[in-house]
Image (cartoon, rainbow, N blue to C red):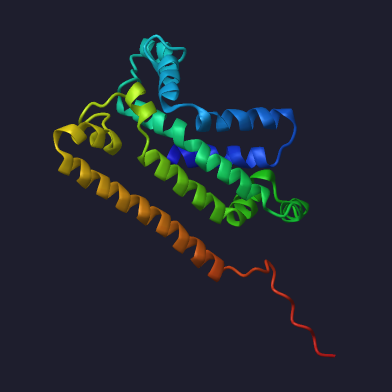
Length: 216
C-alpha cells in the first residue's frame, strides 16, 4: 500500500491534469492489469524480473534475486491492485473545481504546494475509497502471486494461497483463514465509510466563511 499510494497519488494527479494522446497512453497502461488474466500478469512479471528477465538479469548481476521472494509478492500485489487506486484517484482529482487550484496559483503557490495543500485535501475521500479497493484486491490476489512468487510457506505464501493449500489438507483451517479475510475486508470497507462520513460532517461545504457585514 505504501508503494501504491506513494507512486499512484502523484501519477493520478498528473493524469487528471493532462489531456491528449499521452494521457490516453498512460491511462491504458494503468488499466492494463485490470483486463489481464492474473496468470498472464504473473508470467509478465516473471519475464521482466526473473533471473533471465529484462530487469531481473541486472539485479541478478548485483546479487539481488527478486522472483520467488517476498519482494516478488510485493511486486505482484502492487501490479495487480494499483489500478484500483490510481483509477479512483484520477476520478477524485478530476472532480475538483479547477478554479480552486487556479486561485492558489494566482496567490503565489507553486505546483507542489497546490498539490499538497489544495488537491490532496479536496480529493481525500476519493483517495481513501481507492485505497480501500486496492487493499481489498491485494488481499485476494492469487494468480499473479503464485506464478511470480510461488507459494513457499513462511516466505511467499499469502493468506489466499494458504487457503488454496489447506482446502484439500484441512478444510477447517481453510475455513478459518477465509473467515479472517472476510472480517478484515468488512472492517476495511466499514472504516472507509465511517471516515468519509466523519469528514463530510466535519468539513464545511463552503471553503471560505462569509464575512460579517459591518454596521453602518
